[in-house]
Amino acid sequence: MTDVADHSSSLNGLRPLAMLALGRTGADIERLVRDVRRKLRREGRTITWADLESTLRNGQAAMSDDLYWRASVHEAGHVLAYMLTGIAEVKAASVGLHGLGMVATVANGRLPQNETWLMNTMAALLAGRTAEVLVIGETLAGAGGADESDLARATEMALAAETRLGFSCHQPLVYRSPGITMSDLALDRELADRVNTRLLAAEAIARKLLEVHRDLHHEIATRLSVIGVVSGDELREMIGDAAAGPS
Image (tube, rainbow, N blue to C red; front, top):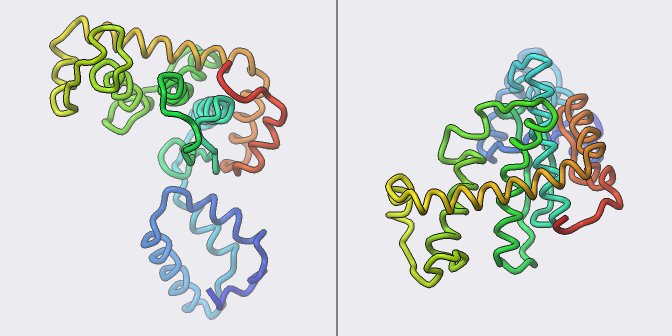
């Protein structure tokens, strides 16, 4: 964007915009910039970083202070679990920009995808909901309710472990295709019990991490609730020397 007037060569101007744009596609950003340019052209002035930031922030969800704090607690739980288990690099965490909140991650491709990896991944997915229980005493419906939700993804992983990844203690060599396992879960009570047991074990991993690092979780949640978007670099600095790997 050669017509950006303020700090056009400064990476400091780009970093907050990049975090605010988390979750948007290239087409979304292109459309947003066109709209801002069109508006400012009518006003007779040149686009600035502040204009782009203001427009991106306009997309923030209207949330009460209570809901904002709950979302911060939830996302901070995810952050802590991802970073302390080492299963993913956290690029940024945000609250209020896209729905209630999100954590942008890049999977750690160096780890063997064994049962420990699977359980830690499930723990990270459940850590938001678990954090709500520990801090607030109840959970919101946001952890479930859709096929791409935290609960759905964790359940699918537990189901895969029991039916097609070879991690089950019951008939581990029997492979069942993904197309039939969800219906099996509804009809097969023993399978549902095994999946639930695995989910409870993953939840226990998340709970232990959050209880051991209670103060750190509160610090991350507070930071999120104050500024709305926290970069991965800042989160790594906050976590500092906290023990990496499964607790």
